[in-house]
Amino acid sequence: MNKSRVVIGMSGGVDSSVAALLLKQQGYDVVGLFMKNWEEDDTDEYCSSRQDFLDAASVADILDIPLEVANFSAEYRERVFDLFLKEYQAGRTPNPDVLCNSEIKFKAFLDHALTLGADRIATGHYAQVQEIDGLFQLLKGEDGNKDQSYFLYRLNQQQLSRAIFPIGHLYKREVRNIAREHGLPNSAKKDSTGICFIGERPFREFLNRYLPVNPGEIHTLDNKVVGEHQGLMYYTIGQRQGLGIGGTRDGSEEPWFVSGKDMERNVLYVVQGHGHPALFRSSLIAADLSWISGMAPHQNWVYAAKIRYRQTDAPCTITHLETHSCEIGFATPQWGVTPGQSVVIYESKVCLGGGIITRSNG
Image (cartoon, one colour):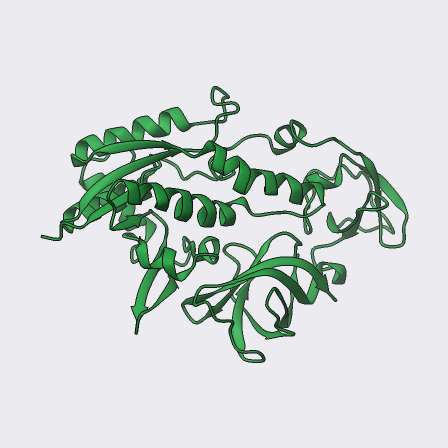
């Protein structure tokens, strides 16, 4: 029996529950850890942490493993949420799940787990780790529809060397079947889709609590005024819903899409039609680079990139590679390249790392 201790993050969802079950079956000394990272409106109808804890506790009881509780609210506010707000205020669209993984789940959580005597930590992510000649690689999850390596690209060698992803080789349907077969009460629980640790809530109303509202004009690319926006922070490149633009221009019935922002003039730019050329970009600049191996990939080799979660891999090359930034060019122009989002680079199933999109080029 393998009696090394694994502390697993248990969220109350089916994925982490089955991950804990599999670890127990493999003979590990398993300890569950429920993370509480948001306290500002815990009684709010959108915050499910109380029910999530009850679900995690119920599963831990069935598996006969201890369940610890840790509060990382201060770390979350300082390392994730403050940057999240700063990015929105600058007109960019950040991805809090990326920071949440690197700063909370694989840093604050890892540090805490070590104080509990952990040899390794585990989560319910759909991803895989393999070690080759002492180098740890992050691989895509087997289920292409659920692969979460995109959100884990900022992990380093030290973090990966401690990580186990017990369900990374499974498909979601298999995970639910395992949960059902073992009588886990959350086998049919729906997946969370809200902001990491904050939950699902009306987004504009939530941002309003922290950032000042600054309405302005909506322009076409030839600077015709076609409406009013509620604040540039509420909009992202490629957005179609919530623009509130009535009527059409030049007889076109096609919907409007956000194509750009002018922060100095407080203007939101829109175009008509999903296929409008202004929505496509052939290259982008990425900064705040993070490479899993600790070494940057080769320049001018053909890799694959994702500029958003669940996007189909897009062939790309890396040029102008420096310590903190690079240019990524695409064989086919990409739709909706969004500053603030992450671009993640792959070589086949291996996630190499990536960076934050700062701007795009035509």
